[in-house]
Length: 380
Ligand SMILES: Cc1cc2nc3c(=O)[nH]c(=O)nc-3n(C[C@H](O)[C@H](O)[C@H](O)COP(=O)(O)OP(=O)(O)OC[C@H]3O[C@@H](n4cnc5c(N)ncnc54)[C@H](O)[C@@H]3O)c2cc1C
Image (cartoon, rainbow, N blue to C red):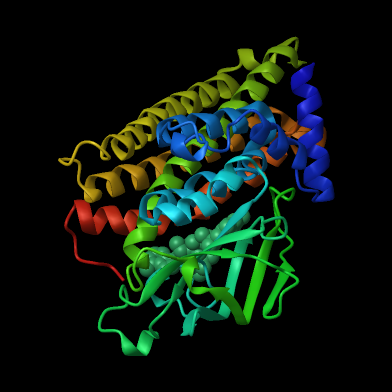
């Protein structure tokens, strides 16, 4: 019964587009938001493995990707801040995120750059003891409710750097929608509608110089630390959604009787669900292997960034595909009712496209593995 109450909550929020403030507040109250942040800042001092498990569990409860995204950015986007910020910055920036007083969004994607992150153009120009930010970001989740942003921007224009990976810098900024030079436009989207996605326009938006994390020009290297963590979290979220879909599908297939027997007695229904389950199990191993590598690398210098990148990207790919298969088969197993909002699996199917697209698409992961693991010629 309680599961159905929570399912209705998510169905209603998906329809209204209202942010799930209650979940964020409950997780903050019980200390979950700082799961992977240091104890001296009020966090739990655990790792990305535990954080992945948390998001997996939230998604599997029926909250799906929307539920997980309520806290997703607060977990991964804070990783580079915790690692590369000064002691004073960490104290100033992180405890209030952990307590839930602040919420953060993550600003990387740009409309004219897409997956070619190194070509991003938003410029943060030093102006005395401030930076002035001008440019555009797109698809920024939770920007309507966030009061902070972890921002990747150029401090040296693309035209003036030798390599495009140079000249990028990471900032943790106040995200004050009442201040001059900052505007948002909400994007209408296919699923996970409780979490807003936005176009963000900066036009001479000023932030104090001490919003810079780490050294100027080192932003790409710094942000990679958060990006690998994000791939693990999204893999966990995809798994949760996939398992939730399979639970609903098998419940329905046991109960629905057509031609005098439960539809789940037909191998045409049963086998695809069984295969989807095994796909999820395999992707689960890949996901927790990647998260363990990420966490162990803190103490074990023999684990390379390359190994972590390959594991995290592979896990995200496998989990997203396994979730998609599970959600699609869950809809089909429900027949016409799979298309009805009341049975929730159509919501899961709409949401499960997100881990296939973001934060890096399936195609770019295949490019990465083809080039970096199989040593094939770069295809683009
Ligand atoms: C719901 C949602 C939430 C998001 N939240 C955030 C957020 O909070 N912060 C943020 O910064 N971003 C966010 N994003 C953005 C997301 O990370 C990007 O959409 C994603 O990285 C893909 O970039 P793009 O949309 O520009 O695709 P494009 O770069 O335009 O690519 C379009 C298609 O072309 C393919 N393609 C491009 N180049 C190649 C190539 N060389 N080889 C093969 N295929 C190629 C891609 O795989 C993709 O299928 C979010 C996106 C979504 C949908």
